[in-house]
Length: 138
Image (cartoon, rainbow, N blue to C red):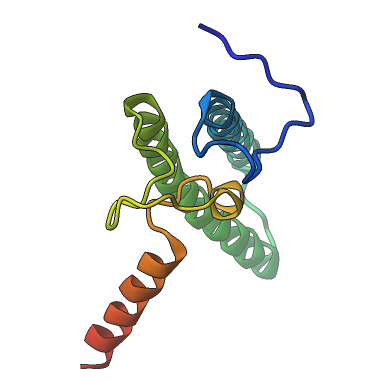
């Protein structure tokens, strides 16, 4: 069963929370985000392979190594993000997407639109961050 969405569709609070249109909107958003990350990763790999030459100047070589290191760290963060996107897509599939893992309450459309991989409501996230600060300070 395929749901038709207008290109300019945005979920809004006047609709029932996580109705079929909203679920489809977020599913497509997550898939597009993942595809963008994978495409960028392929471009990075190609770029790194193309720049596999040795630069004679020490400063140029150091700059190139710094750029390469930064790019690899970015790709590692994006690899972790893909894992979060995959988890969100599983939640879409099992019907738990959009609900706080801690309280079971709706996360909120604005939060999900800004951070589609969110698993906690804003309130639960704030409590989680406060606990982290307390433990970190000890």
